[in-house]
Image (cartoon, rainbow over all chains, first blue to last red; front, side, top):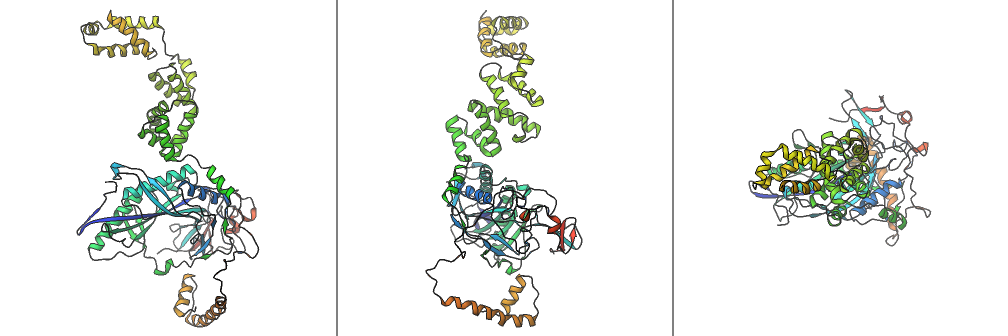
Length: 492
Length: 100
């Protein structure tokens, strides 16, 4: 069984859900798609609006090379066909958030064609095997402005700062069959975008939002009529939309109703989708080629640079950690899940630390500490270089693993270097046999009862003596030397 | 190609332009005249001609990703942007409420 078995139980039997996602991702760029106004989040209203974005008469759009480049790099990351010839079209509609009266988009000739990405198997979530999700196209287009309806009794407020910011619209094939697959697809897409650096993936700031297309059918039958739920802004909500919308459609059909092709909105508080009851002619966009813009023609040098600047992508990185560094599959998946974590880990590896040692330390010590401090890895008080300093002291036997934990705590607090802390606090591991022997003698003298039992055959007590010796030396004794000397001393 | 009264009303409504019955009445023959004029182009066989995108050989130029490099197409001109606004409200455009 390699297909999902997700089914909706209806009164007339089982139903299958079919899902496609249109994801709008804000392209990471300094300036807007067709003007020099800034794109930064959170500025004062209408301060990042040029006369181009405000659609003043006579202003002409000129595409931002970086936005085009990021769309192409994204296309390459999903192994899509890159169209060297593409064109911009006008999508006409009249609304207060769109001063031009049309959105410049790409309907007929998008910059990126067919591609795909693979979602990972996740037994627990009901994804028994990796699955390829087709991507139909990626095109670039302008974002609209923002409307606020609750600031004034009779007026809506318009802020055009977002107007003209570059978006990529990434359109999947209707290849997903369960809420888990839809969630996994969005998460994987976000991961890739963040690796590529073409979108920051901040869903709570609206940098990424999904339109969720859902229909239901009896398994094996033709696709049903779909609805589109707009502007869903988290992985969890996408999954919730699929679940509630599929259920609604099944109930509707089984009650003798028909699904209407329409746009819906998700209400996270009530976990339901609602019809937007848009006028039937609202979708008459009367597209036509934008006469202000020539076709976009990309040359080989441009494409070559795009390809050369692509980073190692998450799947490849994960495979390399497992096969090349001997990191466990689970650790490799966690370390590559987000680009910031991977970047930190790579920096640590770059300092010449053993991969497996580094992976284990990051997974247990660093993540534990960051969790406690409520910080992201990008805000870690200890840098990869400092961490490497600590791990090298463990690797070459200067300090034990136990002492390393103490030193790390001090590093977190003071931001100091491991070597300096070890030196200052006198934490160096000792292999001085004379000193260790003296401590062992003391330990044996203090615990005559255990000594008698051990010599009487209860050899499991060896660990007790190791523990006592380590404790007495405050963890500084070299464990190997302790073992050796203890064996001798206990043998009497 | 020609338009009827219903089409003219629909186009007007999509563009949010109010058109009275008399205006629609006048507009139908006017638009049909224009469409008929343009339709003459259809008499030429262009089946083997690539659509022309520019009158001179030219390709789309791209701009560098630099904020406000050219003051004429940069931001930071809030007062200019809002100069023709029906109402200015705390730096926003104020427009009649557009939500039910």
